[in-house]
Amino acid sequence: MQSRSGTLYLIPSHRSFGRIRRALRIASTAVLLAVAVLLAGCSAPEGTITPPPSREIRPLPQAAERLKARLAALEGTDAPTSLLITEEELNAYLNESAGPLAPLRLWFTRDKVFLSAEVKCLGRHRLEAWATLEAAQGVLRVSFTEAAWDGHPLPRYIVRALSGVAQAALEDAHLPWTIEHITLNEGMALLVVRGVPPK
Image (tube, rainbow, N blue to C red; front, side, top):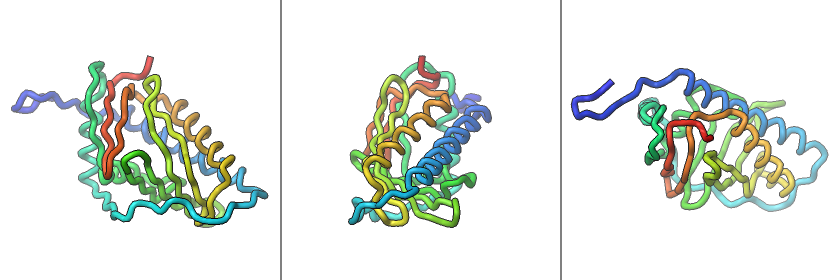
């Protein structure tokens, strides 16, 4: 469909959005299982992790629709394209459907992402984590640097294991884009992507 200004807008593909949601379900479930298994019998270190950003996020339905429209416009385009994603848009999009990590909140900072989620497994628990994001070989690489379970910092070996589990889940999901670069800033992320899967 073409607008009066000549800009081309593609109709969102339900298959692409379904693939994204499947990736999120796989990643969140995998992280949840990893935490449950690795926490068995471990002793948590003392202290706290780095505090999260203080700003409030209000994910509204219209913010999710804006992000969907931009993602749909990328589909099938092989040329590198800049994609700006705000915290409000990403959080609204991620929380449209309930999952094992819900409600889920993500904050962008200048060099990391902070995650906070309520985990529904054998009761209700709180998972918080800091992670770095980078693009490598067309895919997004995630690496947790700190994590806490119900306010208790997790040992480093569990944090490293969570990084591996989350990365494997993202790669197995085969997202329909090639991510060439990502730059984090306060409240937003700028990606350079192509609307085709990595080769």
